[in-house]
Structure formats: structure tokens, C-alpha cells
Image 1 (cartoon, one colour):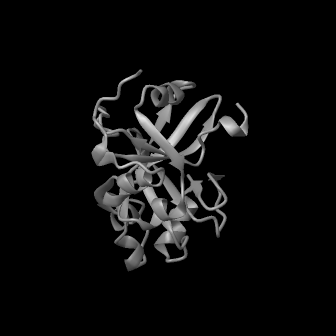
Image 2 (cartoon, rainbow, N blue to C red):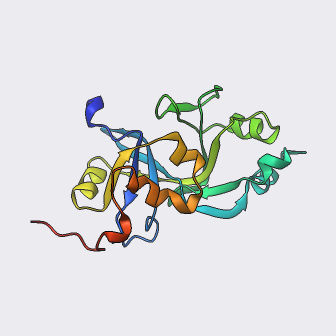
Amino acid sequence: MDAADTLTNQLLIAMPGMEDPNFSSTVTLICEHNDEGALGIVINRPLTLKLGGLFEQLELSDPDPDAAENPVLMGGPVGPERGFVLHHPAQSFENSLAVSSEIQLTLSRDIIDAMATGDGPEKSLVALGYAGWEPGQLENEILANSWLNVTATPDIVFDLPFQDRWKAAAQAIGIDLSRLAPDAGHA
């Protein structure tokens, strides 16, 4: 798979007819896509869990109160016990993957430790779990009209309110989701 074929740094926008409750009305950032499949993080499903609860579970003492109030997201149905952090790449951490020049994915605990002390990235999202696809599966789902895709922008990933991200991502490619039928057809 060459770089032009990859869906890395694309936002997957669930079509209105998406029946899988894990992905209904979601926006998923594809962090890695290659011959082995794809890995994405849902960026618009906040849990009731706040970062403070995660800091507590990790036994981090005296966490930064501002960081503690940030929500944790449901990143996807696979590996819900695993943590993932999307962030601006201004700092480097142990196990990071460049999604784009403006977005990184970190899987190591050092970023959570930095966030707890108030020294984390300026903009970040913490998610539990991820979305995963086998080789060819995501491409087939796109061909079956399950997803729209658009290049990710940091403002959609980090700045917009969670409830606005699905519609904003679709609007970035000129689509009003409220005008789409839940069932797509083929001519």
C-alpha cells in the first residue's frame, strides 16, 4: 500500500444508516492504515469518566485540577482497558505515532504522568479502547457506503464540542447529514 492509498489522518464519518451502535453518529480518526489493517480512535463519544478518575486508578497523587476535569472518551470497542492519547506533537513521549504533522497518538504512560502534573500537551484527547479493521475491511465498508471520509483537522479533533464533531466533519466536505437518507442505494 503506498502513501496515496492510506486512510491515515482521515476522519471517518458514520453514515446516518450505521446500524452498529458502537459507531452510530461517530467520527473516528484513522491513526494508522496499512497492509495489516487500520486503527482508529472515536473522537466524539465522551464517557462519564473524567481524567481525574483515571489519575486515581493509576495512583497519581495530587493531579492538576484542570487536567482532572477533562473527559475520557470511548475510543472504540476493541481493548477498552487500553488508553490512547491524541495530542499536538509539541512534546515527545515514549511510544508515539505521527498521525499527521499536527496530530500524534501516544500509547505510553509517560504522557498521562505529564498530564497529571500539568505538563502535558496543550491540546489532547484521552480515549479508552480503539476501533480496528482487518486488511481490506475498512475499504470494503467505505465502498458499502458505511462511512464518508475527509482529511482530519486539529480543530475538529481537539477544539469543537463533542456533539458538533459529526456534523462538522461532514460539512467539511459539503454534506449536510440531516439531508441524507439512512439507507444508501447503488445505481
